[in-house]
Image (tube, rainbow, N blue to C red; front, side):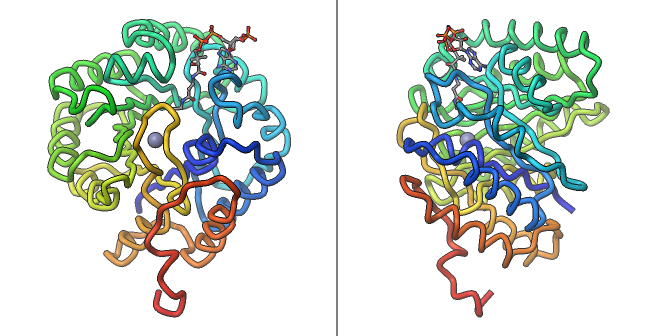
Length: 300
Ligand code: COA
Ligand code: ZN
């Protein structure tokens, strides 16, 4: 069994400029849960000036129904985001920073070093709270930066060593922010990390985009290397506003199909998921991807 983290409500919705109604977002999150998605990134506690689409997170939180066996996670760029998320009742956080200096500046308006210092602070802060929290750290531009290109492997390994030392029990996500990674690169880095940290509690995740059509291939390369958690977005919705040229995440339906056809269960009902993907694809202002949505349902 692998774990899919459905990120359309965050990585996808953030790419849509027109404000979506809170109810529309919440209905989609619930429908994703009902299709079998057991982990959902429900949004982001970020500056409303940076991503206006995420300004109703507190309202989304209030309307979200807890569902059995479904975990909701939210993205945060700083401790402020964690504090707001906790106030809204969330206990799972995805902290993001980039391997490349220029993408980090563009995305969170600070140096990589400042983001690393913030990670130390927010872990201390989390330890000081009574809540039973889980932290994921998303390392954006692990493989490629829209401004600097391919990142040196030693730099990525050093950053991951830092993250792992701060929060050994974290889930660390290798993010192919631009979708320009290739299966060999993903496979080699994933294998090196799993080997280096084989005696640790760290969980590894692969967050892929499908810009160059390699999203599924890259995820399967990560799987072959031992990674079992994958971020995808229903309908392939998305495109980071701070990564020019990148399109949406690998479509959830495409990766579910790839795994299920290979005999690897995902827990997701493909037909129900495709119905939600159709709803997402019909949202005004969204840019979508996906292969499976174009296949006649009778052929699935
Ligand atoms: N949630 C909500 N509001 C926040 C916030 C958060 N996590 N962090 C800061 N803010 C608010 C501040 O209160 C301030 O509000 P004000 O202008 O009304 O006083 C404003 O945002 C600016 O705060 P500042 O600390 O100066 O941040 P900044 O302007 O340097 O921006 C970030 C830094 C990280 C807050 C911003 O760049 C951001 O939210 N980026 C996220 C981008 C993103 O989501 N990218 C896609 C994901 S990969
Ligand atoms: Zn992304």
